[in-house]
Image (cartoon, rainbow, N blue to C red; front, side, top):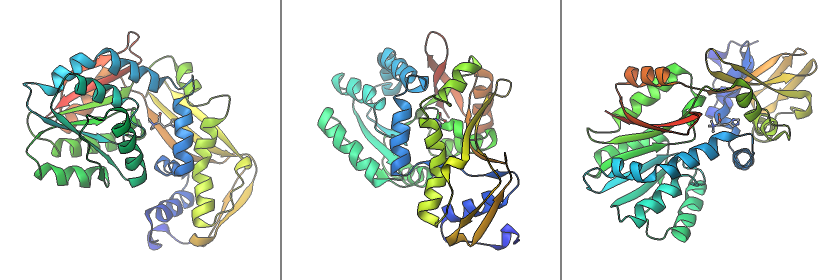
Length: 322
Ligand code: AVJ
């Protein structure tokens, strides 16, 4: 078998799949869950009763919109509201609607890698909240933020909701926060959602629903390999398995091979073997507490200005400054 350093592919997806499936233990990145099918499955997850994150964050933003508006608008100078990975914008629209009815001077600049997602978002906002000045930015988060950092002179507020940071290991999260820090100036603010440590059963239920939507979402990375790289994974031969370590606060998703099997991936020229009960690690969904968020902020050179939470402190939105 080839050493993976010596084999290179043209797409990042092909490269990472090759490396992940030739490593031991095997792994695949959750960032590849999200094609058209995966986006739809994630929408379904957000609508499940077990997936508490979306509803709680929605309520936090709704209950605190006045205070958030006062904090973000400060002395009243116009600001640009950037958002990383806005999705369908359901939660952001609470703020957009409130800012608009309060006559707060701002423009909205959602950033996404998918032009299609941006077009849909722009369309729905123009339809539902016509007063909002919206300028979509297509690209990767940091290329785009870097570009805009030089550009307009407006104060910046960056939104990163949904506990999307939870997909990153702490070391990567610090890198990410450092990048955010480099994208802002003194006086700019960052509003981010962090899912909190809580009853471990609540977390397991959120990532292992009985209807199997999360299982389908997890297996979608295999479906993509089949579609895009000529793989022949049999999705039924894998089990979705979720673990949560209440000490570290890390929820981890695996695909577990139910049988000994071989899989071909044509465009990678790869034939992989899986032993019975061998794992492919696919995702982490980190849970936080104040001490960990303070540590991350400190490592990245950011300061916590305040936070907003639900009554049971299941979820928190923190505001950071440079
Ligand atoms: C979109 C990364 C916040 O980790 O909670 C949902 C993705 N994975 N169910 C999360 C997800 C399984 C989600 N994030």
